[in-house]
Image 1: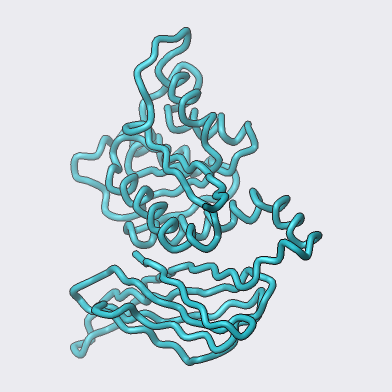
Image 2: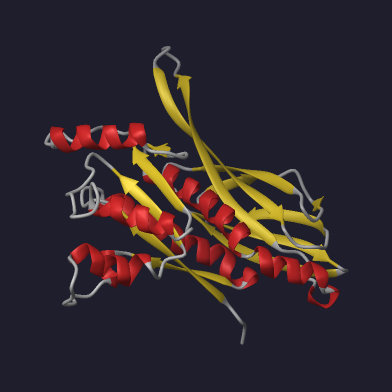
Length: 283
């Protein structure tokens, strides 16, 4: 048995982007598949449609959601499409109320805005309210054009949050040599869209994908090899075997076929003379 630390991740959003909410949930599950077994951390997604229950109370429905979800959450992702959402008695919308409550409690809140095509039947008044809210929003927000780009940014935000949430545990490990954790690989898939031209000079958009492998442990990993799991429809470009020292990051380029956008890799290395391996599932 292992002692596993659990952090809850909440999806806050109006009702017009269910696909992005599902993508966030899948990104959390994918992070667990790639990291839980060797980092002893598990992320629990919180979504109002699954995790809230009807309850009579003194406040309104938003107060109930705040108590059942926001108060439980460690990390909050606020997702927006073409709507800001319906106003509440205390905020511009339910989603804004959740963001404010979480921020006031000192919890990390990550605002993401969809910048793809706007639906033809979009509510123009809601769209303008959202644009005004985005314009006046403090801090830093991000835009995404598809669910894969959202997944990449979600993983990056989660790693930033975990570094803060676990700082006290990491300090204990450093101060106590008996708790040295050896090689600890952090696997982060990433992608970017770039413009290219075809043989006729027409503008096309392509996606470049890679995975970043960081050794967060306190021991060097020797002779590291990154390979696709058998029967996977993609290739890995890896100039190895190579060493990845503690604190060092290396990048492996991923080349997908048209038939798949999912991948699973296996990483093999030598640690203190012992051969080891791990699997990582990527979306």
